[in-house]
Length: 296
Picture 1 (cartoon, one colour):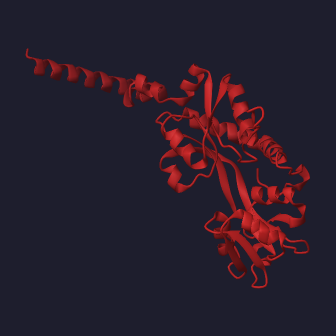
Picture 2: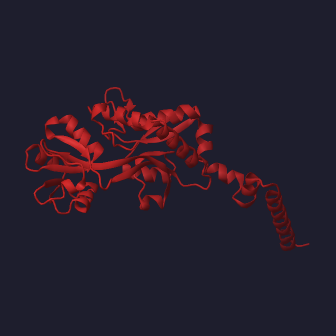
C-alpha cells in the first residue's frame, strides 16, 4: 500500500468515526457530545475560551479609563481605582475567585484591546452596530438617558417643551448631544460650540436657556456649579443609549453568557443603580439629585 492509499484509508476511518460520533450525540441528545463532534478540537477551543483562561490564570484583566467618572476614577496619590465599573469588576472577580489586573485604555482602544486579547472585558461601552461586527456585548448594564440642563425658572418635562424658536440650546458640535437636540428639538434655536467647556460657559453666562446632554454630563456639571440650574430627563419620547460590557468574540459563548446573566441579576436586585449612584458621588452628585426616571 502506498502512502496516498494509506492517507485515504486513514481519512475514511476518521470520517466514519466522526459520523458515528454524530449519530451517538443525536441518539442520546447530548449537546456536549454533539459540540465535540462538529466543532473545533478541544485544544483549539480551550485556547480561545476566556472563562477557562481567567479561572486558570486566577486573573481578570480589565480596561480602566482615567478621568471617566462615574465609571472610572484613579487616585493620583495612592494609584487606587474606584468608580462604578470598578465596583462591577470587583464583584465579578470575587465571584470567580480571581484577582484584577488593570490595563489603562480609552473607549476606542478598549475594542482593540479585546480583539488583540489584551483584556478580558471592556466596561461602559455603547453597543453600536459597528462595534457589534467585531466584539460581543453582554446586554445593557443600563440605558443612559438624555435630557437637558435647564436655567433657573425654565420648566420642561418633554422635548416639546424646549422645541420652540424662543428656546436657545447649546450643544458641543459633532456629539451625540447635538444629534439628539437636532432630532428632538429641531424648532429650537440651537447653538453648536467647539467643546463642552464652551457649552458650559454659554450656560453659566446666561446666553442660552438650556444644554441638551446625557444624564451623567448634566448631573456632574451641576454638581460642580449649582448655579447652572437643574437637570431633567426629558420624555415623549424617552431617549436613551445603552451602556454595556463587551467581550472578545469567540465560538465558545460561556464567558459572554455568564456576564449577561450577571448583569441581569444585578440590575434586577437594584445593585447596578447603587453602584451608579456611588460612582456619581465621586463627582459630588448627591443620591437625591439622581432622577427617579433613571432606568437602571
